[in-house]
Every structure is written in C-alpha cells, then in structure tokens.
Length: 608
Image (cartoon, rainbow, N blue to C red; front, side):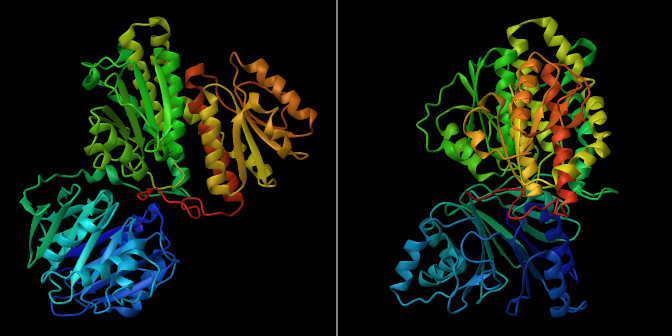
C-alpha cells in the first residue's frame, strides 16, 4: 500500500528522484502523497497533495526552484486507514511543540488508549490519525535525545509499524525503526548517498548495497554515518546486492501495463519451466525441489489471500488429483483465528505476489514458532517473506505493475503444478500420465499465445458484455478456482457485479438473483464434464438467460463464444484464465475505466 522513500545526498534537484520513485510505486496505490526537504540548519519544507503523483509534481514546481539545494529529502504515499483523505492528514505528523516530526506506515492498534492518556494531560488533537497520537506521545515521554526517546517509547506502540523520526533540535539526526512493516536501508558507494525505502524494488534503482532490517531493529543516522541497534544493542548487518535487470517495467507500445503483462505470459511460462523441467527426459530437474527431498510430507496446507488464494485452491486440486495427497487451502487473514495444530508431516505452502502481504506474514511466523515447515512461492526475491520461510521458490514473473494480477497468477499456478508433479514423482504413480503432462508443458507457452491472438474477437464479445450490469461465472472441477479468479478480474476493473459459483449449485440461491437476459459466463472444455455442462446450458436457456461459452469445441446453444485451443485436462485452466483476463480487460477498457490502478485497490496490501 503506502510507501516511504528517504534520501540523504548532494544531488542538486533530488526532488526529481523522489517523484521518479513515487511513480515507480504507483502500482501499490495510494490516495495522497507528499514530499519534504531540509538542510542541517533549516526547518523542514513540506509539500502535500491529494490524488496522483502528478498533482504533487505540479505543487513541487511552484514551491521549489531548480537551483535549490537540500541535503535531506523524503517522499511518502499515503493510503488512508485512520482519518479522511485530506492534505491535513498527510504526513509528516508532529507534536504541539514541533519538537519531533514523524512518518509512519501501518497501524498502531492501541492508539485510542494512548490518545485518551494524552487528552487527560491536556494535549489537543487536530487530525484523525494514529500517527498524530504517536508524535505527541513521543513529546510527552521525551528522554533528552531523539534516539533515547524512540527506544523508550516504541514498546508502548502495539501491532506494527515503520517509523521515521526527525528532531527539531538536531535536524541532521534521523531515526528509522521497523516492526513487521517492511523497511530497507540502502547506500551508494559511487555517490556517497543514503536511502531508506519500504519497497526494495524502488530502492534497488538507486542504491548499490542494501541492508534489510528485521523486527525491532533501528537505524540512527547522523553526520553522514550510521549505526544499527536491536533492542538497545549495537549490531552489524549483512550487506546484499540487487540485480536491477529484473525490475524492468516499461509499457513498451501497449496501452496499459495489464495488456502488456497478459502478452508476457507465454515468456513467463517458458521461464518458469526452463530450469525446473527436463523435457528431454520427460521429468523434473533433480534440483527443482531438492530442498524438500529429505522430508516425507503426508499433507499440504496452502495459505494465501485474494488472487493467490485462487492459485492455491487450484494447487490443492493439483496435489489431490496428481499426487494423491491430502491438501487444503486456507484464507491467510482468517488463519490466526483458527485453533490449528501444527505438525511436522505437513508442508505449509504460502504464496504472495509482493512477498509483503501482512495477512500472510503473521500465520507464517506462527507456524515457524511451532516448528512447522514453510514453503513460499513468491515473485519478489528480496521480500520480507522470502527471508523468513524455510524454503522458497521464485516464480520468475518479474515486476508486475497492473493491480489486477495476470502473469504473476499464471506463474503461480504453473509453479504449484510443478510442486504437485514433484510429489507425484516421489510416489512413482502412473508414469505414463506423468510424462504426458511434462511433455505437454513444453507446448503450453504456444497454447497461451494462441489464446492471446484471439484478443480482437474477445473484444467484440466484451463490447456486448459492457451492456449488462451483473454476471455469473459458472464452472466445474479444476475450472472452478479459475471461475472465481476470472470473476475477480472482471469486477476488479470493470466495476460490474460478477459472482462465481459451481455450476452444480445453480439450482439453489442463485436463481433468486436471475433476471431476463442475465449473462452467464461458462467454461465448457471438451472433457469428461462436457455433457453435464451442456445440460446446464439448456437449463440456463430455459430461463431466457444469456450464455457466453469459453470452450475448445463448438457450443451451438451459446449466445456468444470465445474459442480456446484444445489441451489436456490438467492444463485447461491456463488457457481458460487467459481468455478470462482478456475479457475483463476489454470490457473495462470499453467502459473507460482505469485499467492498471482500479479504484480503492492496492497491489501490495501491507496492513491488516
């Protein structure tokens, strides 16, 4: 969600660097933004704007001259969790005496209790945020220096945070601290510049060396030097290098990032399979999952949120069908409320596009505290989650900018299919079918490319869909998680109401919602369920509803058709979801909606 970027250096017009960083983080989404600049002997100048980064850029051009020189620069995007979307609620926040200014990510859950304590001491509050409470609580508990005060006060704040503190008395002293909320410290040898950011990918463009902060760690910067402390003790952290080539995110000639990322999916699948599948011998590479070889797992539990939950749902079906193992999927945000027994014979598999999803990090930490084995499939190598888990696998989808996930989702289901094949291979079950699926994986990028080539015909169908207000997505078996994912994509960016459900449940509550010419989107692949699906279409048509069939065979009773190539049953979900992505994209585009940043949604959900 919101992001922080801070810079110390001698760049003459570093505000351009800050604006460039904010634009790189727009995919996370936000509702307001601000920047601040200052020198050692000057007060802080703050520029705020509600809306897009372009609005902040316009205000910056009026407030700062090209020749202005500052040593300290900070930028921040805000996603409102406490208080309205206003400039006054933008950071930085400060106490009544302006002794301390702070920037804050995440949520202080006990802020009301702290606020009541301060009101009893005659403190006044002018905004509606938990961050203002933090600033005034620090003023009330001042311990002579900024560093001592921060170390004294932080245990009073409950839940999670990333803070930047600046002192009025010594503006060249800055304290950064984190608990749960991601925070990375960077340094450039070439330019002798310091950076902090809540997003590794944005920071990697500027810093040569990165230091990842762990929970309860604090960085104190003063006079072009720094120290790192953990719970009052000085510590030394390892320095890591970043490969910037993996962060490329240009739109090229595409109208939107989402469309570009849909077109990248054949290449993404090739990349997923390249190092993990031995096509010459029709098997997985021995190194693909070698970290798991010494364990014998009897069950797999998948834990994820949102789009990743749909990937894991399909993954659980892959594991059950192919490896004959018990598998279940859990909603990450609900996991902490369950009385779950963690055992050593279960592999707990997490998935996240960003690797920073708060709802996934908490169950991960709990499972590790109970000595459970955790496996993470992630698309950001340097994320918080990839550094916490026992085993992890990179999906190799690279940077995805569009909020509505496309290529990352396809990379996820491809990777989890390989995990299911790994468990299948260990059991030595039905080798002929195993080799058939491996061999078909080689053709999957071509199959997906064929679906993408039907984009213009899907656009014609989307034009018809744009005339309706609500939809059902109806599928069966392996296609059911794809129904939920396609429905999610459709409503995320078209803002049209769509609901997914198993086709067999059509006779129940859903009938109460149906009106004449109500469109039902059905995946009708030519497999063992074809006759059942054709019967369901007849039932739908009897009620004068409309049917859009996505199929690899002719469906004469459908009102509209989207064609997909024929592929074996196990791989049909890949072709079907790409057709669903294109349907969602073209419908939203025809309706004139924002494609890459749909309203009220964020790419990386870093608060609970």
